[in-house]
Image 1: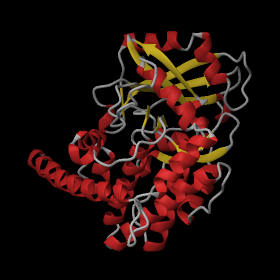
Image 2 (image 1 turned 180 degrees about the vertical axis):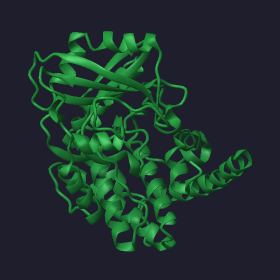
Image 3 (image 1 turned 90 degrees about the vertical axis):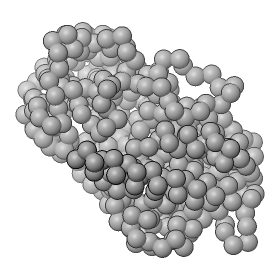
Length: 376
């Protein structure tokens, strides 16, 4: 999180919702139709996602904090992430204003026509092309740094206990868990599954203190070939920090909440996920596909920044709009078109929220770096 202001924004979801609970954060925000939202909608949580048949789309790819809530919260969080990226790219403030204008234009486009298409920026096109070319060997090299059927222990992967190993083996003996694995990549429904290796996965600071396992499986009777190996990510589901709608009914089980949210917000990902209980804790499982990638946006020029803002907001808009009927989409679209000024095409509530959050997060980032430097 000390690496850059953008990295700090990505890792400080709770601070965003702390601001939302304040008088400044709560005032004058529109209340959109209650739908499943991402809950942590920043740039790094969008990217190419493959479905069970291998089709690829840009969708939201991390639903840890998903909840039935106000879609405006996803918009503000995305706006903050985009503004932070613009600052990290040394772009002037006028570019940030243009990004928010185009962001709301892209988001609204999804509500004008649910089947609408939008031009992809070059950054997105390149990432999609890379995604389509990827195979198991790319995934193995990237995730486990090893194309052999083992998970190498080291900085990223730590040894697990005998109890955990036995529990993982028992987990994949369950029929519904086995069906999750065999349903992908056109595998045989009755194909046998063998756990080859498993390790604790230290994947960012959010993993520490919670269960997170990388599990290597072999599917079928053949040799250890690309299509017979799969890597499962099993992650402990935690309580969301995003506020839910007061009348929303969502699962009490955190893992079931994540899976249900994914099925609504990111169908390509949701159909590949399963909620379970592991050693008494709620978890969710998904097979990592070679085509799944995170959008890497470190440096942007002005033109690409504006296009990226419009496109990513469109993706989020589609995720929200597909959950609403025609009347709800129209009401929300009309609400978004209000509160415009003569000098800024983005709604005033979005602009004010992002500006205030940028100031809060830049201050908090510097304080975080000071503490980090004192310990290093």
